[in-house]
Image (cartoon, rainbow over all chains, first blue to last red; front, side, top):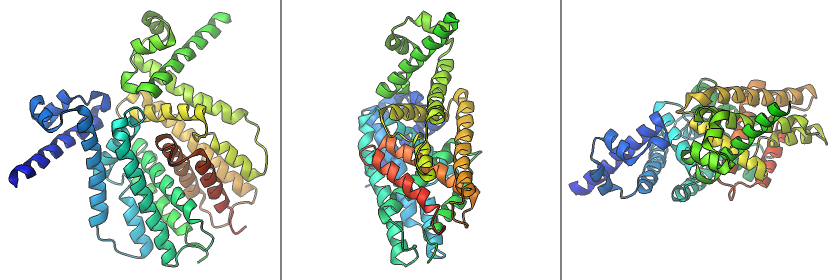
Length: 198
Length: 198
């Protein structure tokens, strides 16, 4: 089905142009006209793939989530269980340029959900997925007998999730203050603290 | 100096109108024309107080920081040291409608710093102030002999700060998932976890 494949590829190319405009100039500047120009297609052609700007934004936001999810799922995790967990959770932190761009775009769209209901649903789905991922980590620590006995699992899930997103926020907004090394060290410290006294 | 007082008051009124437009319609809609309308003054009058939109945005962002700082400084903290610390740190969380609006505006401006250098300096000053506040809390826990002996202070400061901002982010974007009660419970849990084994 080469046509279908081309269609999908073209949509991704347009979404990537959207990311580019957002990262370089901000969401206010991400007009259909400018995105078409950056994607090197006509506005009419862009409209063929996305009939509204809102549709284009939802697809572009979804692409961030898909990329992060695919990478996290297809990675091979090695080392001790704690190391593997740290490696898995690092996929949700802006530890390199690709992840930084994705998360910057994600932050911009997330902020936009405050006034744009079209993006809200996706934002909630991903919130729940990430909550689930944090839950898996906490459960696995318990199943492996690694976590200290006095942990409150529900509290630990909320704490881990807030910590990950807080670190991502600091890394995106203040990379000079909160480097990738600090993120990794803080995450390692946190995971180890859950296993104390075992 | 009634004139000076009036001048300051008028600037605050305009900044509050800016917040209102941002919360209701988003930053893209916060044109000088619209803000003047919401503040119930003429565009010419607004220009008398803020010659550029950028100046107005910096003042409006600074007002969030001033409000939060004043409230945190002038509050009387009661209860045990841990309760007082929780109460202090709660000032940086969207636990009620006033704080929610302030933090929503803060998030919108923070995201804007990614493409607007005018807001960047203020954002960094406040990052450092908040880092300092978290540092004070961790130091005080140690000084009072409350914290467990194996804490790494520098790591604890980064962890506490990321946790606070991550909870604030979740509370702003997903108040239906992460309520004020959950924020408070997670914060209490975290502070108590620092004192285990003492």
